[in-house]
Structure formats: structure tokens, C-alpha cells
Length: 312
Image (cartoon, rainbow, N blue to C red; front, side, top):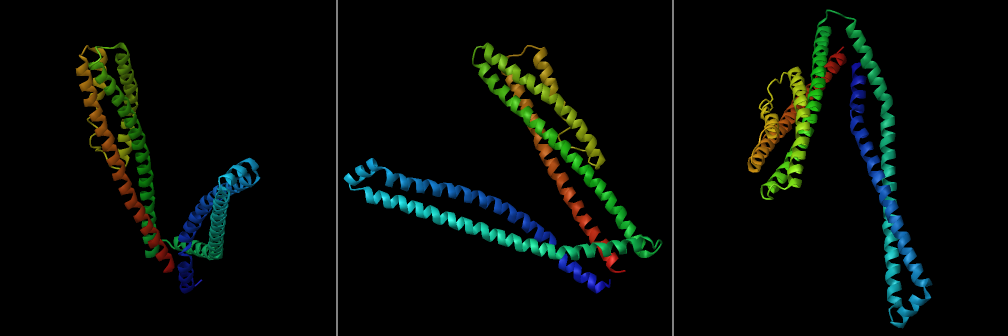
């Protein structure tokens, strides 16, 4: 296949991703619109029942006629039924229009799929031809791009692992904050309740739960630091200063402090865990930004590879 024809096919199929995205969105809109049709149909049936009940209820009709309100009531119910029918019909028409648009979009996709297969087959053939011509400039350039692509793919994988590890730690930190916040409330109550046994037990129950989650958080942060080292992010601001939280828990259980002192320590550690949570949020954001940069470079590499193949 000559380059002019191949370029023409590439230009034709360039719209396929947009068409597929459009088709997916249309399918969702159709599902939503169909649910709306079902709701409007139920409403229309209800309005029709109201009209029939008014017509068939001789006692109610007699009372309304006696009061001179029957005709007005009937007209009101009939008008509501008509309006419900109009809304239902319009919704049905809207679904039909969406289905028609989806059908047209799917037909365009089907028509371009053959061109897509032709293009992919030709590009594969050219790739094999290029790879068979070792030690040429085109081959060296192509393999250089391939090596960069492989490296970036590995980096993206490691970033995904780091994001997952950070997200797990973030979720645990959120749980710790919940337990410490509850403990702080009970500690405040304990200060003013003359050491009530219920508030005292509730406070230490929340601290015990926080301790369990903190142990989990420590493990998750260790794993996160390992994942960060794989993507050359050894420094995780704010994560290395997390030591004092468990010390607080140990001190709390091993020594006798005033209730006010305990409450203040809970608050201090709550602030510290909150800082860890915020740092994790920023860390995830930074990794995702780096990942997007690499994904953009991946797109550039694929474009350069295709341009090399098209130049053969």
C-alpha cells in the first residue's frame, strides 16, 4: 500500500475514538431517558386512575355536584392527565431520537472498522519489515523509541502501585482521625463529668480503636515508602515524623494523667495524623501529575513510531 493511501485511511479513522466515546455517552443517556419514561408512564397511569375514580365515585361526585365543584374538579384531573400524557409522549420521542442518533453513530463506527483493520495490518507489516532491517537508521530510531516506551510503561506501573499504597494509607489515616475525633469528644465530656465511668470507658475504647488503626497505618506507610523508592521519590514530606502517635497511645495506657492532659494529647495527635493525611493527598496529586506527563510522552512515542513506519 502506498503512503498516500495509508495517510488517507489514517485521517479517516482518526475520528474513531471520539465516535466510540460518543456512543458510550449516548447509551448512558438512553438508559437514563428510559428510566424517565417509566416514571412518567407510572405518573400518567396514576392521573388516569384519579379521573376514573372521580367519574365512577357516585358519592364523591354527588358531594362535589352538590357543592358546585364537580365540573371544576373533573376538568382539573383531566387536565393533569393530559399534561402527564404529553410529558410521557415527549419523553418517548426523546428516547427514539437518542436511539436513532446512537444507531447512526454505530453505523459510522462499523463503516470505519474495516479501514482500522486495514491500517493496523499495514502498520504491523511495516513494523515487521523495519525490524528485519537491522543496523539501519530507521531501525535504530525505532528500537530507541521502543526502549523508552518499555521504561515508561514500567514507571507508570510503579506509579499506579504507589498511588494504590498511598490511597490505602490515606483511608486508614481517615479512620484514625475518626476514632481520635470521637475520643477527643468523650475526653472533653470526661473533663466536666467528674470522671464518669461511661465517658471514661468510651474515651479509651476509641483510643484503643485508634491504636489498632495506627499500627495498620505504620505498616502501610512502610510499604508506601518502598513503592516511592521504586519511582525515585524517597522523600515523602511529613510521613517520617509520624513516630510520636504510638508513643502517645503507650503513654496514655501506661501512666496516670489528668483528663485534661489526655484530651490535649489526643488533640495533638489528631493534628499530626491530619497532617499525614494532607501530605498523602498532596503526594497522590503529585504522582498523578507525573503519571499524566509520562502518558503524554507515551502518546508522543507512539506517534513518532507511526511516523517512522509511514516514512518507509
